[in-house]
Image 1: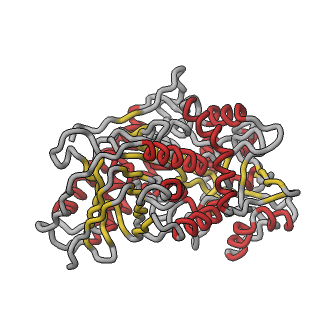
Image 2 (image 1 turned 30 degrees about the vertical axis):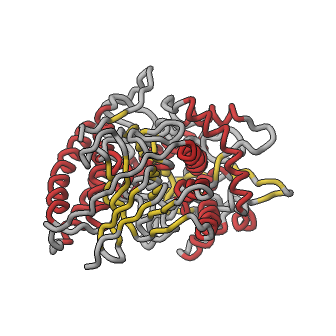
Image 3 (image 1 turned 180 degrees about the vertical axis):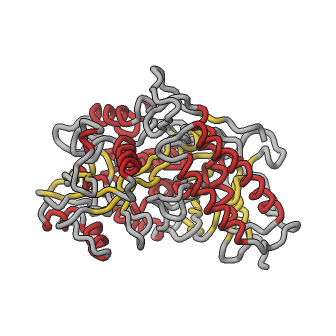
Amino acid sequence: MPPSSHHSFDVLIVGSGLAGLSAALHLAATHRVAVITKRNLGDGSSGWAQGGIAAVMGEGDTLASHVQDTLVAGAGLCDPEATRFVVENAPASIRWLQSLGVPFSQEDGQLHLTREGGHSERRIVHVTDATGAAVQHTLMDQVRATPNITLFEHHMLVDLITSAKLGLPGQRCLGLYALNEVTDVVDTFSAPHTILATGGAGKVYLYTTNPDTATGDGIAAAWRAGCRVGNMEFIQFHPTCLYHPHVKSFLITEAVRGEGGRLLLPDGTRFMPAHDARAELAPRDVVARAIDFEMKKHGLDCVHLDISHQPKAFLLEHFPNIYARCMELGIDMARQPIPVVPAAHYTCGGIVTDLDGRADLQGLYAVGEAAYTGLHGANRLASNSLVECMVYARAAAQDIARAQPAPVPPLPTWDDSRVTDADESVVISHNWDELRRFMWDYVGIVRTNKRLERAAHRIALLTSEIQEFYSSFHVTRDLLELRNLVQVADLIVRSAQSRHESRGLHFSRDYPQTDATARPTILVPPSP
C-alpha cells in the first residue's frame, strides 16, 4: 500500500458544485486553493439544476418583492437579514456569471426571465431547462485554467481535524483527512481555512432528485467536529420527479408549471385548485403534500403533469432537455401528460453559519446546501439555492481575504494500523437500503410521533453497527457515506421530534397547527 500524503494549502474547499467553485475562483488570485471532491469535478447537485437562478433583473420587479416572496415561502422562519443579504447581492451574482460567459437565455436582446411557484414576478434567469449544467461547465473550465487552484478528484472527506482532537487550545479547524480512492489511502490536508461546500443529504431518502453524491458529508463532519446544525427537519420534496421504471432522479422543473403545466389525476381531473388558491404555482411544500394526499386517497403510483396545450415549438424552445428525455422514454409531452411523483430534493437546514459563511469553529466555513444561513426558513423558494451558493461563496472568500491566517501545526498521519479489510460489504449495502426505506416511510412528507419513534429506534441500531465497522475495518467510500447518512438521519429525526407544530415542509398529524411564534431548531453537539 502506498504511503499517505500530506498536503498544505491556504484554503481547502470540499465540494465542487457552484458554491465550491465560486469560492475557489474568488480566492485564487491571492490564495493557494485545493478543491477536494469525492467523485469527478462535475458530479455534484449543481449541474442537475434545471429551473434557474432567482434575481431581480426585470422591469417592475423589486428587491422588496423578492424578499417578501422568500419570507412567505419560508413560512415565517426565514432570517430577515440573511434574506435581504442574498436578494440584494443576487443581481451582481448574475452579472458575475455573465462576465464568465454563462450563455443565459435571451429574448429581444434581454435576459429571458421565467416564473416559478411562489414568485410574484418573472425573475428566474435561466439557460433553457439546463441552467445548472451550463453554469457548472463554465465554472469548471475557469477553474481548470486557473493556476492557483489544485484539484483533488476522487478524494472523500473522512473527518475534519480540529485543535480539540489534537489536544490543543482553542476551537479551530486545522484541516481534514480524505480517502484517496486512487491509492486507497487516507491523505492529510492542512490549511488555516476550510470551506465545506458538500451539498445536501437527499440520498437519505429512497426517492430523491439528487445525485448519488448527496450524502450529507459536510453536515455530518461539522457536527462531529463540534458545530451546531439548524432546521434539519425541513427537507424539501420536489413535487414533480419523473415516474418511470427505467429512470431515477430525473426532475421535471418547476418552470413547466410556471409556463402553464397542470397537475391531473389519471382520469384528467385537475386537483390543485381544491388544495390552494395558487393552484400549481403554490410553493413546493403545498404542491408536494397535495400530490401525496391524492396518491394515497386514490391508491395511485403517480399523478400527471400536463403541458400539452402549449405548442410543440414552445416546448422545444423552453424545455429541450426534458422534451428529449421524455421522448426517449416514449412520452411526447406535446401530446400527453408526464407521470410524476414527489421526491426528496433539498436540505433546507445544515451547518449554522453567519453572513460571512463562518461556522462555529475558527477557520471553518460552510456554503451552499450544506449550510444553514437562515435564508430558506421552513421551505426554500424555487431558484433561491444557486444564488445563495454564489452570494455566500463571495462573502466567505472576502472574509478569508481579510483574515490574518494563524499558522497550522504539523498534523498527524491517519492511523489505520489496527484495522483490517472488511469482508462483509453486504452489511453496508443492506444498512444503506434499510435506512433509505424507513426514512421514506417514517420521516417523509407527512410525519407522526409514532413514525419518528420507529425511525429513531432503527437509527440507534444502525449507528452502533456502523461504528463497529468504522472502528474495525479499513474505510471505504460506501462506509463513509453510510456513516454520514445515518448521522444526518439522526439529526433530521431529532429536529422533527423537537418541533411540536406543522410549518412549511414539516407536517405532523399529531401537531397540525402552526404556532404563533416561529423558532428555528438549533441542535448543539455534545462536547468533544
